[in-house]
Image 1 (cartoon, rainbow, N blue to C red):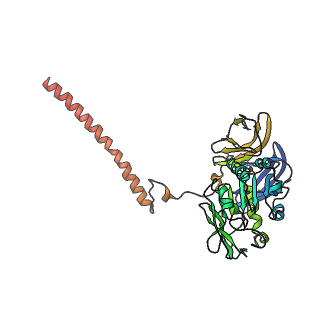
Image 2: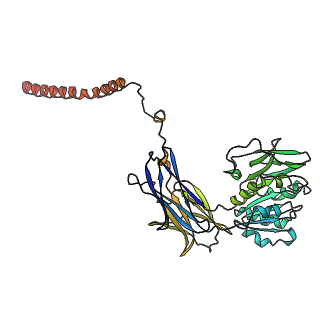
Image 3: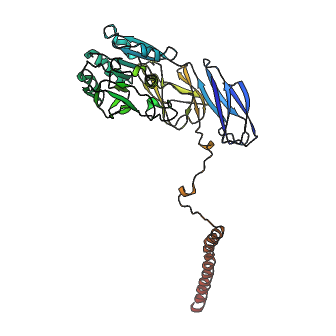
Amino acid sequence: MTLRVLVKGLESGQNMPVSLLNGNRLIAKSAVEGMGKMTDALEFSISATESIRGKVWIQDNALDYDNSFYFNIDTQEKINVMAIGDGDAAFLRKIYTEDEFSFSSFTINALNYSSIEDQNLIVLNELPQLPNSLRAVLKEFTDNGGSLLLIPHNDAGPDTYNAMLRTMGTILYKELQNTEQQISSINFAHPIFNNVFEKEVTNFDYPEVKSFYSLNTQGRTAIRFTNGAPFLTNEGNRFIFTASLDNLNSNFKNDPLVVPTFYNIGKLSLKLPKLYQTIGLATAVDIPAQLDKDKIVTLNGPGSEFIPLQKAFSNRLQLTFENLPETDGTYAVRNDLDTLQHMSFNYPRLESKLEFPSLEDIQQSKIYKAIPQLFKDLDDSNRITDYWKWFVIFAIIFALSELLIQKIFA
């Protein structure tokens, strides 16, 4: 695994020592040389399997505000994904691999309902029928923060799924459209495709479907058909396909787009901690842990301890950060004396951006295009203060006049 360190503001030929630490132990040291660019880079090789409480430290005695950068690599918890249905699950098993996911697949008759609450993502894989008991369990599952991905069956009909969907939100299926449509539009700003494409693709070889359900939705569409109808949309933690992905109806499963689509839906179902968080930015992190009733977790770090906002679900704990912590560093997430995992926090790097405010954006400012005009205005403004001399003179005259009047008429 390669760790790339970017250093800004180096002059050409300037050498800056950079150290990499794991906790308090130095594991690598090198130097980055300024090449006259805005940003210079240095790379370290670290183990992708070893847990690291990392700190990158730049030895710069002139300014130490942002010379330290903390990151953390813990053993990642696997995301639990369960597929329910008679549809082909082989493509899902290839996407939800064992290194990151714990994937299971069951037919409706072999399903153990009690295992649903332990999942992070449930995929309804072309179920022709949806029993009332399963609808109730899935409603409770999504209410507790679990994610649901629905792939419809062509022969099911809209009412099969709407009985469940109308209890969850505004997305509802309408009639089946037996017209071929090409999948031709990707919402690159949708969270599913965040950081998937380097740029917006216009010459993509899009897949197609032979039939699809029209949709009544106020959700956020990720993929559309040529006619503008949604192919994949979501409302909160519910993701809805409008067409069957069976090979007889669509070639979407054979298209490269299927991998990032399903993979990122799986990743979105559990907000695992990133390498680091930024202090002052609102963020939510999921901890795969089950706590006893009335138990809370604390974050213990460099000389401080605090209790974050937290919400407990059946199979995870959601922590929310914004104003805390106030100090950068790597913090231990603790339940009493047990350390669940570590999280790293860094100050915003806004001071490192070599961008300066525009004078036009500063209120009560005046821009001079000629120096003589500046000095003239400064001289005029200073001349106003000369009036105090006249006030003193008049005050003395009035005081002497008062004394003279008293002496004459006394």
